[in-house]
Image 1 (cartoon, rainbow, N blue to C red):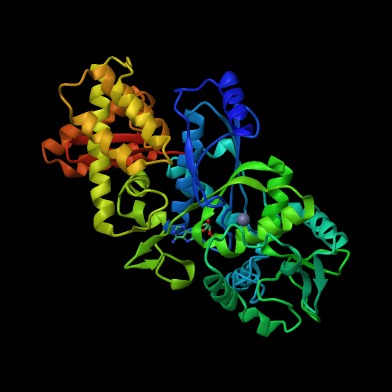
Image 2: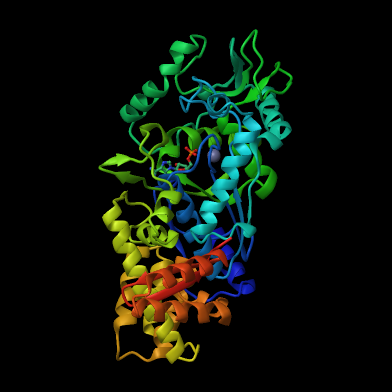
Length: 486
Ligand code: AMP
Ligand code: ZN
């Protein structure tokens, strides 16, 4: 009973905030499993990162808020969390399989810049976006695939030595038929799997030498007669790594193998993660990760938000409408991470209003409780919900019930808010102290100008406050001023 041992050894050393165990849905087992770490008191977490040929849209951002809520839940439960989000700056082809142009090379051509230039620009924008969404990027490593070419080549060499590879005219492929456990992550029936393969298998038309539609490229050769912007020499010739191998290499290099939890969007289950598992486990004969967790899609009008649909919404569209970036985070929290969520501007505006009101109520309670917390059944229920596979919709409902409960002791209310805030990352309690007195004075002056309908003065004051690094929002129950993250 290794898991019981792990559980107790974890408890012995971790400063756990409660004794409740943590349950997470593990795609690998197909059920909700008790989380036990590999190393007592610590948790290692790898999330597939963005392909930086364009800006991350709000669908992509949902995947990183989910990973952040997971990381915060683990931290709140007392684990020291080590996180990696990779930056895909090579090898992800337009067909998401082994055909089509490299998204980075195509994006660079389209923008008339180098692949490195667009990678740097979109990586910066990505980091800014997730910071605005309340993700603390100082606690995360962001390795670039192009910095781990040797590690990727080493895994391919190992697979070659063990007989898992074959060569075609365009690259080195993984032979899925040689790996008995192929596809274990994807619990879909055989027929569904064949259909998925058939779709991926369009690429067989591009490469008739492939033995099976599911086989995938580990190393691709540069096209004959032309030079790519990004290419490297290897034992098999000049080329570039396949998309899946980068995650296997970076996760192993930075977190070890196995590590605790791997996350991504549900679209990664049948191909990208299935292939990561196959190559890593075949090469090293041990699991890559113990828990595989997948977030559901954000949709608009019943369609997955996707870069190719061409009608993406970005975080900058949200701030341009003067809506708080955290209102998007609030919207995400209203759905369980495993449920699809439909985006509309109306629902985002409602989230913005709700968040303003919740923040006001939370701050009033904090003030009245004089910052003192008192644990009670309500706070224990809150912690239990968060530890029950990140049940954010029920936790949010409990938070509202709590802040509206006039009969509850303020200290007890504050303990519930504190637990929710640690995991939700909505900064319900944080900012008040961070707003210095001179900014608060400007806010008061602006409030007076607004009441006396001196709108040119109130606008000028808003510009002054915002240029000092603060965000002003006129919520239904008063002005809310917050420090701009980053
Ligand atoms: P990409 O940059 O395409 O590699 O995607 C980055 C992350 O966003 C991956 O984890 C995807 O699974 C996830 N993702 C892509 N589209 C959506 C969507 N509409 N909703 C939620 N997650 C998504
Ligand atoms: Zn990945």
